[in-house]
Length: 122
Image 1 (tube, helix red, strand yellow):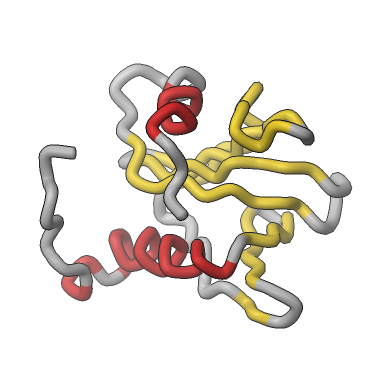
Image 2: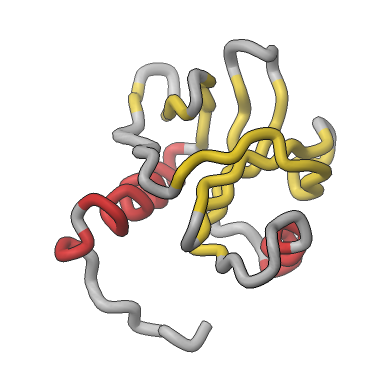
């Protein structure tokens, strides 16, 4: 399920002015620095890992890490669920967000494979 407009607005508040959100996916780190919840925000310029409150995954509180937009997120690995590696960290994601990971990568590495946006004004 996509994140709500309210969550996107909270994420936007932690981004530099003018940076546009393309994708947001909730994630749970499973290695170092320990179990923690994050929102991975893919923008037109960067990929930002936003730290959230552990018991409120919809409330980002700070930018934990920033990666170049040309950083590959996937492909997701499936074993006991879906997981991606980003910046040396392993994140568990809900399986429904595997398509988001693939779309974010395709946007940069294979844009010809993406269908046209049916709702470009949203």
